[in-house]
Amino acid sequence: MRSSLRNSWLGALLLVVVTGSVPSAHRRDEYLQAARVAIDPDRVQIELDLTPGMEVAESVLAEVDLDRNRSISAGEAGAYCARLLSAMAVDMDGRPLVLALTGSTFPDVSAMLSGEASVRIQAGAALPGLSGGTHQLRYRNSHRSDISVYLVNALIPASDRVAIASQRRDVDQRDVTIEYTLRADPATRVRGGLSVAIAGTLIWITTLWWRRRRQPCPTAL
Image 1 (cartoon, one colour):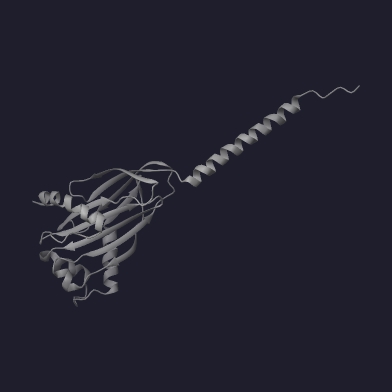
Image 2: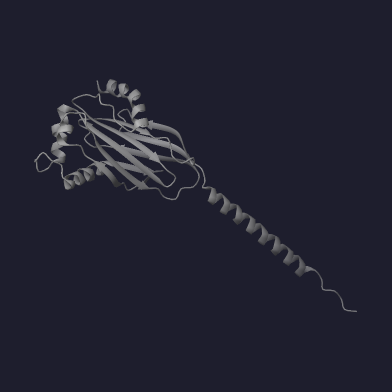
């Protein structure tokens, strides 16, 4: 049944990518986690919408509203975000990255319990200095796998230096590997060209100097 649900979400995912919102119709007994991954030349950003269905909303709320006062404080929101990030993993070309929270939005408790409101989490990580060519970014999410269904998709890159080549997801969409091509920074290409030109000039000057040294000195009359 979950497999058929995931398939039905593939079309709805287009709406998620274009509008940045989660479609409202979803199963009452599952926790929908829809992730969007944005890759820039020097950074990866992840936006995750978490929408609990009505039948699991109380369970999700209990993880957030720790003092059970039916209100989500800034401290409780921060603690939940920390637990969520600890269940997520991102690596670049096999090298683990450190995700940092960059923003979060929590709905009112009544809206969350209605099964229509979403928690939105934004996180990002700096990428190591990457050379031009093909790279692979892998994203995994294991948060509340007992009640969750997942969606994940790479957004169209904002930079023309990044071109998405493929996305390989596992059957549950908890794990995706995004292969992309990074074009070299134009400034790097210019610096590289200057370096080659300078090196060529130095070789030419050295050769002339060496040849002149080897020429015999003129004989005095």
